[in-house]
Length: 320
Image 1 (cartoon, one colour):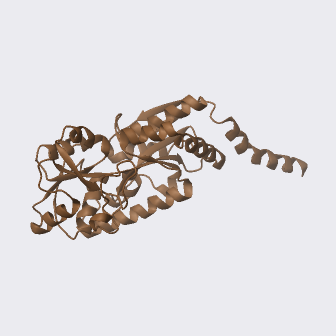
Image 2 (tube, helix red, strand yellow):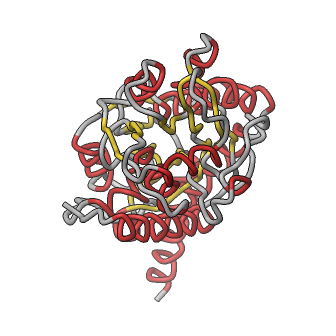
């Protein structure tokens, strides 16, 4: 009986001991995108600062392609010990399950969301010489010639594509989608008058905005962004309910000890509230850092998933 009691005490103490010693080796951070994009940049700001302040070591493992399935699927199958994590964005968890019948991972089955790291609006842009000067003007143009107004995206099924479908559907209008191979080509297409508008993150828009090749009509979120407060929100344009953003978050494989998840959250949240870190996120991506933990972050992901399901059904997008 005494042996059983001691064994039970030891078993209960092991997770706490693991958390107190965590990490004692490099942490592998899987990313479903190539270096230089919003997820990569957001992740490296965070990991570099944690390394600087805590001495933790990270190995960023970029595995782009296959709609994120490769990186996310690898993370889902990883040993749940806190030494393999995933950094992903809106598309992997709030869009992919809408667009694909067979997704090789499941949020509830395979992951524990740790923290939503950052959140950024998309900017609705048109050519600088366009007669359109607001989202209301854009809505009027789409309604005047249903299906004639074109919009570009980084590709079919991207979060940018779905955000614009949401905007068009909420306006009760029709527009023609033109997919490109990435966000930068889509913004360049607007600058070159190949398409009428696109919605993109600040990093992709900024060079063209500074060169006065495009102008911003507004943002795709319900409220104005503190990072780009001069640009009106979708709600101000009368698009009630539209609230599309690009968030980046950290995830652990399901089964990772709660104490390790808690330690990861606390350290990440501490870093994300540092003024210099907040300024860096704002400067490179027009993003806000957040402190949403497991429950609140999971709730947000699920709510967005249902919103995009409704958008897909409304515009006739069928899962492939």
